[in-house]
Image (cartoon, rainbow, N blue to C red; front, side, top):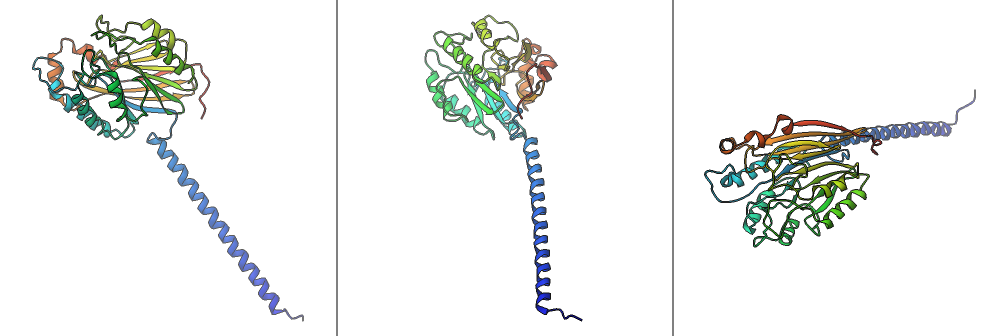
Length: 348
């Protein structure tokens, strides 16, 4: 019988041991990779659930007509003596919203164009846990005295979450599928509550829309171009020029406004015009707006959130001549609206 060489035997044993170890290491590496992959998928899904890195969804809050003031008027439906408390309550409620991404203040954050009131507003607004943006209302701008647009631009640019704009109209893209445009319709050469958008600003608006056709555009302004109700003292004077611009494009999906202190939602030529009531008077509320892009359209989930100062709201309601106009119909307060489009599916 042939003898087995002990050295050959040891070599063969070592070979199998090394291969088994190598195989075990490969299995371990595969397991580690699979675990990492599953954790990554879960994390990505979690981020989408909470509104991050989801380019098809925009979830934000609109607060308008705060009219911050320190005066007292025991007969007005505008609750000036509680204006700071109402704003603080709104900020607190927004901070408890898990999925809101930012806040837009659509004008008249102060009742009188006064630097101290602006400072008070900023101190409260900066308590928000999410970014905030601003555009002017007629009460904010001092026509003959008070705070000028130039000064307001400087004050706001130093505090809101946006690079300092060259003017009080500017744009911001929160993700690759959306563009927010903020407009300034305040008239400065006369004392009036009417709105007007100068040609230079409308030309800029036209260019912004044209150069961002791959994005869905939401315009935020103080003065509505579709009135919630008609007012000779508050309407926008050059509505037709405004419509000539936005009617040329299919990527404008919504125009948000305040000024009229009334809740109203109107669809005009596939653009949703959302008028939000004021914080200073009944219903003393603000809106949360969630926009989701679908393959064949756009979904709006709109909610009206009342401030928690129930006694203040009840007093304001009792002093109002037409509270039903201010609060609107239920469909003007809370609505889920899907607007169908013929455009191709969005890029993923």
